[in-house]
Length: 301
Image 1 (spheres, rainbow, N blue to C red):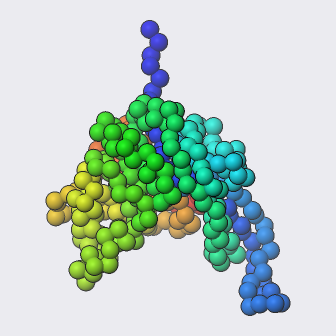
Image 2: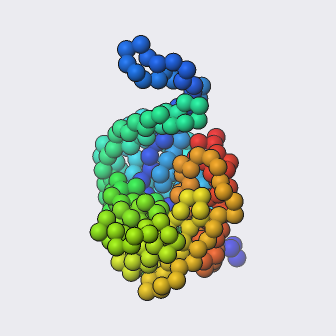
Image 3: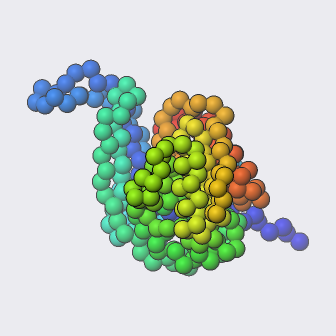
């Protein structure tokens, strides 16, 4: 008898096209007090849910990416750039894919240019089948509609398998029953609103971060919320619990933090797929995110 193929980690969310333009700026433009960047490197790569799926595939597991892509050049660039370890299942996209371009000089950001953006259409049978067959699900919500299009199916998935939701202030609330939600400290503040976090005078203490995580866990009916703190690590909070668990980073990571949140969420989802507890998944995710930043972040080819 042939053994059944292992069920995949399914990443659902909004793919972006990320562009990094790096160079040196040693003079100002003659017509305006603006730096002139002499370009050394110009690279494009999948961002958003595309980056999360790529990082999950680096763990050596089968990954299915469910996202919306169109007929535009940016969408085709993403299709061509996805790692072979990621199987793509597409929703239609009405409009063009969002493109985010970072321009840096001497390694320092000068400006980011955003353009494009479309609306995902209805999911087809392949997308529905992917969620039914998932071993675990990661929702990389960038507020552009993919999670909305699949919300009912994501709710059903959360009742069957571990589901990790990486939220966005302009996106959907996690479906009830999510095993873990992973907002950054800034996102947690934004999601609760200024009136909420103004109740505590010490809004940057670990206790305050944990309190916001616990309130979000109650609001979302999530099993746990990990508030990520960048180079400091993360705070894991459970609903109706006063004492959160602080997970420090193994070292102070110096480097480009772009994509660290995607690395954290992808690592946690993979760990939960393998049977880890949320506490174990967050510890592993903190360590992997620190290594990711030290290695150069999303911009590391």
